[in-house]
Image (cartoon, rainbow, N blue to C red; front, side, top):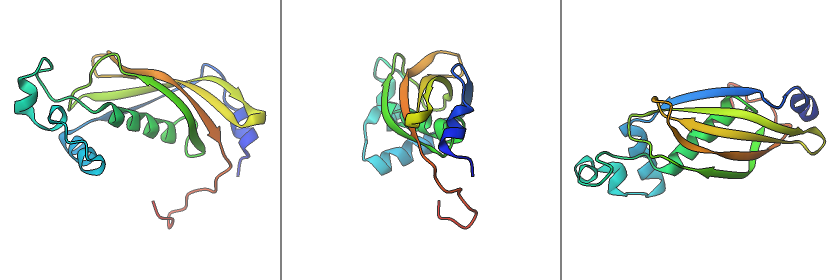
Length: 150
């Protein structure tokens, strides 16, 4: 297994990775079920059509969850744990948008086992729907095996 120091030392500021996920009606419904967020702007097209948004919007915390998925599957992968995050949401994202998260390594502190990453999430039109920064603690975790629980 690669040590934390080796894994971090291999990362360079400016390195990027991307992750894309289309957010479907089912995703929003499951999010509402899990969190209890029953806001009609997320769930009810008839209601949303009568608002200035004209359509259902994706909860910002669901977008933050997609950012977490991007971190877990790209940089730093399954060895990172978010310690701090700051995200802003300059534009709304709508149900059925494809959200692409771009992660950029901003800095690495190998001796402290920390990595700072810039985050930009955009929709299929290239419009930024979330941006910010995260600091991750990089831990030596055991490899996930096929017979481990998810």
